[in-house]
Length: 285
Image (tube, rainbow, N blue to C red):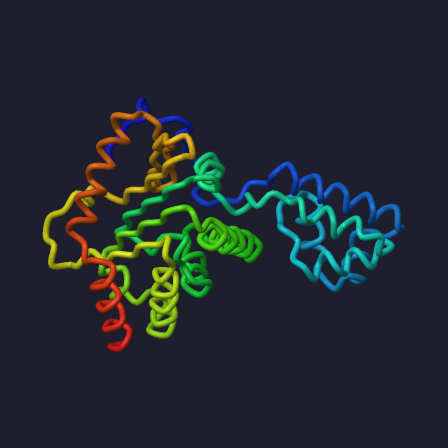
């Protein structure tokens, strides 16, 4: 994608996709540890009571893991059943599992009035099924731990709430045809994926277009394009590569990417023709 470090804000490098602890998650962990110690449990004893591993308890207390519903409920009962942990869990920021350089984009994304995505490498996170996403995480190099996979998967699926919670936001997706013909995860996973994409694309505020492989030259050959418009009508772009990400705010660079996205939409199949193609592809699996 066009744009250099001089034209970006918040560019960063590091371990792509490694979850980072949020302040609220660390606070919840410290609160849990205080309640556990007040109840007179060692970490090992507490793990036995809540029927989770000692490692899981430690990860939650240190703010490195999002506690699931069962963990919160059992911990609540083990520490007096006052409702304090249940209440605290509702305030955990939904950021762990998101790469650090993606977080500024994600914060703006939650209020965007327009979100456009062209993707040629993999199905965008907003459209992925759990099985498809898990397959991607399972094959990540260097390998991720089970806790890391769970955290990233939870963050990815939670982010998809945007599609239903923001009915006034216009979502547009232009997807290369080969993203489906690759059959990532196998035929069953791909059938489920196509069904999911078709279901999301049926929403009145979502447009899904497929860029057929018959289009030999197009403006997306340099890579994916992701754009968003804020309520103040400012446009930003985001670019993610190997172990790096860039938040692009330079109007000149964003304008170039907007021009390319407009051309991609024109070259892609219409929403109706894209639906027909995806239905045929699903039937052939």
